[in-house]
Image 1 (cartoon, one colour):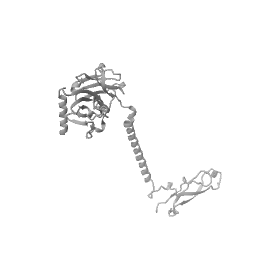
Image 2 (cartoon, one colour):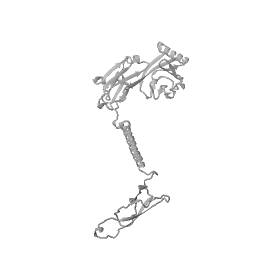
Image 3 (spheres, helix red, strand yellow):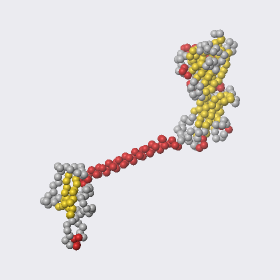
Image 4 (cartoon, helix red, strand yellow):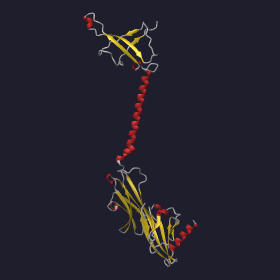
Length: 349
């Protein structure tokens, strides 16, 4: 930590020292998140052995390269390397990369030649309080420049502006409310969204004169109605189907319970018992007279059997037997599932 403080103090001394004995050049480089940037360092030896790069952040410093050799104890060392002209390359930049970079070049091992490179980060913050962007809603977008020099940068010819896809300044359109703060290099855009704003792009640019240094865009994205099925309609339908299936299961269970109550104590329905079958030998007695010929009644001898030999039915002589009148095709009935015999027992005396 003490070494870093010494480096930081040494850097301030060099920056504040008079021009005699040193030569300083100032650069401004602008970037947005994820870009690759190159920080220049001119008039140095091709082997970079006389080049040192130091980064100055908010209240601390970090030596990145010393005599052309990379320091691997920094968190971002994997994203850094030197170009053939000893310029500093930073890959996949993030907001944390903005700040002041010094390139020290020693001539004859004595007087350093210093280049100050200010790396500025431009970012647009989308609405943070809204969960859904839709027509009729009001949105406010904030465009902020992050820099060690931002307190004076936007007062020295650098400007932030909001433009549309065609590059027209939105300040000229009354539907947009634009407010800026040059002291903090910040500019905001507020508007009420229209139906035709879906997929519309607005860009925040930082310029100097007519030159665009960099820009960052924000695209309006309305809720896709086709995607609503994924997280609104489908879950609701699923709940309804589950509820319907549960209701049908309850109905079927209730009917099954009622059906069990109609069975005999042994739990079987005698009329539906496939082990019981009646064999019917039917005959029609000869008619006594013409009146009897019209009597369409047949008497039947009913013989029953069961697959279970241990089962038996006790029929007493005084039990009443009900005879059934059967009309149908001649011959033996093969399917006797619809034939029933009823024996009515006399009450005990």
